[in-house]
Structures are given as C-alpha cells and as structure tokens.
Figure 1 (cartoon, one colour):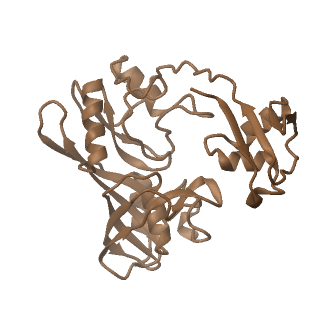
Figure 2 (cartoon, helix red, strand yellow):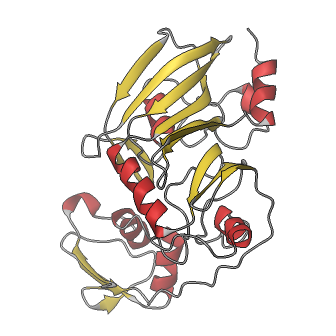
Length: 307
C-alpha cells in the first residue's frame, strides 16, 4: 500500500490551518495524528516542513508519507457474551451498549472481537484480517442488538454476499424525538461524508444510495417509538435518515443538532436496538430469523415516557 500523499491547495481551502485541512481531506486520519506528524517535521509544504499552526495558501503543494502501520496483537479476553444462536459456521450475539465491535485506535481491549476470539478459540473467518476476525458487519458502539459472527471464510463470503444484495432482514427499534404524523414511511436519501465535518455522515447528493423504511409502534408526548427496516446499510444510516426528517434519535448528540431532550439525561448515546436479523444459513440454505429482547435501559425509557 502506498503511504505517500500529495495534493495542491485550492482556493476554498486557503487560510485554513494545515492540521485541520489535512484531516478534512483524508478522513481516515485524525487531526491529532496529523499534529504528531507535523511535530516530527514529516509534513512538507512546497518541500519545506511546517508546524500545525501554518495556514495554507492557494496553490501550496502539500506532501507527506505515513509511517508503516504496525498492527497490534489482539488478545483473546474472557468477556461474557449474550449468545442468541451458535453452530459450527455462525454465532449470533446480542451486543450490549458501550461495547466496540472491533479493535481500533483507542479501543484494543474489551471489544466484541476480543470476546469472540476467546469464545471461539480462534475458529473465526480471516477475510477481514487480524483486526476483525469473524466480523462481516458491525453496529455502533452505543447501538445494542443482533450481530452475526462468522466462524469460517465460507460462511463469511455467504453472509457478505447477502449483505451486498440487501437480502438480509434488519429491523431496528428506536425512540425518536418528536411525534411522527404518518404511521409509516420510506426515507430514500443518499448518504456520504458530511462536507462540513468529514468524521460524520450526512445526507449528501454525492453519497451512496440509502433507503430506510419506518413504521410507528407507539406515540408518546414529544417522542415516537419506531421500527426501522434497512434496505441498504450505510454508516449511521438510521441516525442520519431520521434526523434528516426532523426526528433525531433520543440520546444521539452527534446528529440531533440540538434536538436531544430531557429524557436523554444519563443516556449513553442513541436509543437504538438491532432487534430482528434474518438471513439464509450459509451451509443449510434455510432462512433463519432471530429477535433479541430490548435492553433494560430501552424498556425503562418506554415505561417512563409520558403518553
């Protein structure tokens, strides 16, 4: 993989701090990481090293090379798993709130991967590399619910193909701010990186097709309990789509745009649960569907919301 980067500053970037400019252009790199490169004199403007406070000028040529990545050794950890189903090919777990799916910067321990490595004794698919063994799809850290783990490459390829074809049933339950008027509806809006904040997603005409179907389960005073079914599976799709129609998820500070209200006090992240998942088993060819119970925090919120 080529770790060398080279780009020219355009008029719309002019006078931006270089650390901010580079992190916006390359969303896989954090601003703090860019600042470390700058501090080590590894970022050049017009062939001269610059510091973080340098403000770029039109037609500046920026170049830098990333150091070779060193993948940390991921350790198996004896972490309890809420197992919904298991056989020789797949494992279905009910992921708790606050648990990261796979290791990444800042989260090398306590993840789903650490837990399933211990549980499965190394019998996991290797297609996604040493950092994501067994992982064929993911849900956000603060989203709870059904997650498929693949124990071998055959099952991984089969589930991945169904995900690509959008044939897997994925129904989420959520509490959104505001009262939805229609009993059901479809949101068909492309999702891509937010041009104003490259670390977030947004409805973006330049993004990928994204379709979410929703139906009202119960209305409360100021809130609505909904089921959202994914037709596509874009990053943060439900959170972005529901916010785009004026009904952000309760507790979602990232996409609420000021819409997080009182019942979210003490709530860790968005109120979203991957409740139902259905797919064709990779070995038997039978359709299987699993329904996981709402977590305690979610049910307690439903019980206390004013009707």
